[in-house]
Each structure stands twice: as C-alpha cells, then as structure tokens.
Image 1 (cartoon, rainbow, N blue to C red):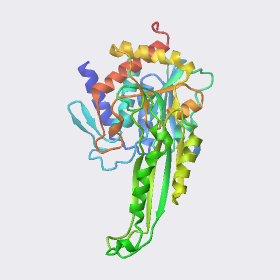
Image 2 (image 1 turned 120 degrees about the horizontal axis):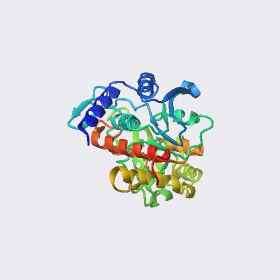
Image 3 (image 1 turned 180 degrees about the vertical axis):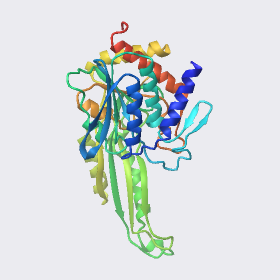
Image 4 (image 1 turned 120 degrees about the vertical axis):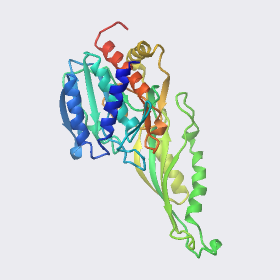
Length: 364
C-alpha cells in the first residue's frame, strides 16, 4: 500500500468530514464533490426530485456500471468528533466516516487511477425517506449491467437485503399513586411483557444462510411522569426485520395482528420489502467477483445486508444492484463511528478493477 495513497485518502476524508451533511443539509457537500468529480474528468449534473431533493450524477464515457452511495449522514447523535474529525494512526473518527464519506473517498481514488467509463450517483435523503434514489433516473441511452451501492459491509459483497416493518405502538394502563402500584396498571411493564412475546412472530424464526439470526430493535420508548405515579401510557418505536423470501404484506399483516390482538394501538411508520439476487444476475456477480479477486487475491465473501439501502430503489427500477463497502455496519450511527484507511484503499482497488473490467479493459 502506497504511503502517498494513505496520506491523500486521510486528507480527503478529513476534509469531507469537516462539511456537515445531515439529511436535508447536503448542499455544501454536493458542491464540493461536484468539483472533485469534475477534476477527475467526469461531466456532472444535478438531478432534482420530489420536495427539492438533489442528487449528484457524474459520467465518463458510455458506462455500463453504476457506482452509487449517499451524501447525507445521520445527525451528530453524541459523536465526540462528529464534524471535527480525529485521526489515530490510520483510523478516522467522525460522523459519516463509514456512512458514507469513507466510501466516497474510495470511489474518488478509484476514479483517479482509471480512465474507464463510469456512472456515479450520489444520493440525498438516504438516511431520511430514500427520496434521492427513488427520484434517480439514469441518463437516456445507457444500458446498465448493474450497480454497486457503497455502504459499510466489511468488504463483504451483499447479494441480499432484509426488509423491515417499522411501527409505533401505544400501550394504555391505569394510573395510581406510586406507593400502591397494585392499585393501577403500569403501562410500561405491560409493554415489556408484550415486547418479550414479539419474538414469536413466525418469520423471525426463519434462518437465511447470508444473515445472522433476525431480531427486533426497540429504538425508543417513553412513558410515565414521575416515580410516584403508576404510568398510564407508554409509546415505543420498534424496527422489525423481514427476511428475504417473506412477503412484505404477509409480514405487515402478522405484525399488525400481533399488537392489535393484545389491545395495543399500532401505527406502521415505514415498510420496506426484502430482496435477494435473482437468477439472471450471475453475470454481474461474476464480474464483481473477478474484480475483487484481482484486487485482493481472493473471492468476496457473500453476505446479507441487514439494513435498508438505496439498492432497494435501484432494483425497483430494474437495475441489478449489490452492496459493498469499507468498515463494519455496527459502528455506523453510533458515537464510535470510524473507518480504517487501509480498508478504504482496498475498496478503492476493487472499484478500480470493476470499472476496468466493465469497460472491456481485460478479459473475465
């Protein structure tokens, strides 16, 4: 690994992390990256979608491969170095270091080292409602063989993605003086009894070879007013994964029935279907796998992405899409978010080979 490459990657990532880009505030970063891509010989355009959401598209030649990721990040959420990055050796800490500015740096370096044809899409609102990738349309006249969506996967190649049903539930109890809890009904305790039963949903017991065991996430809970009052209400927000092979409507119906049968008010906040590689996508998988082998000397480990990504919207448009990137997903959105520059450079090497092979600059 070239020392100069490390230095340039570190410098560029630090500069991008200094530009805050939480969802809805992607404008400054978009402008900076438009300049970076233009300097690398790509022609750029800004594509606008519903609600004024803006994507940055960049093109060189007549590409058959799309490389995509997103501009926005989640808020700082207590990250100690959110928008003032810290470097320790080859680790870079900051909000977006993994998700997804480190991925963008890998792409920029790959484009520097190649004259291959390429189409790049940098989406807004991925951490919001996914409106950027939903609004995306490729330039007319292009026939895309596939897309690589850059998200942290530990350099594994995700050829499947879990869906989800996100709900908000409200539990009602009965108030009483806190010194006489048996005189009331504690809504928070009632919720936790029901939450413990949630694992009985039939589709959560399914096993998939690309995924770890599926489990729900209680993302937020609130209720009660004081230790001296038995809580009469409780609200919780829960994300429930849907494994590939399970119909989204079927999963949503089971989730709704589970809570309604127990007397809870339930509101579906969001629903996303799962996906997995289809039979006709073997050629694209072969191309990416060969590029990976040439870059790192081994084939990729196939994986299942447990979180929604822009790949879902691209696949809805008929573009075969896989997910891959540097760093571990578990660190994203947390105060521990950071990325290893060595892994960013490995991703850059893989992308460079993908673009080269897709442009016919070497046999498969």
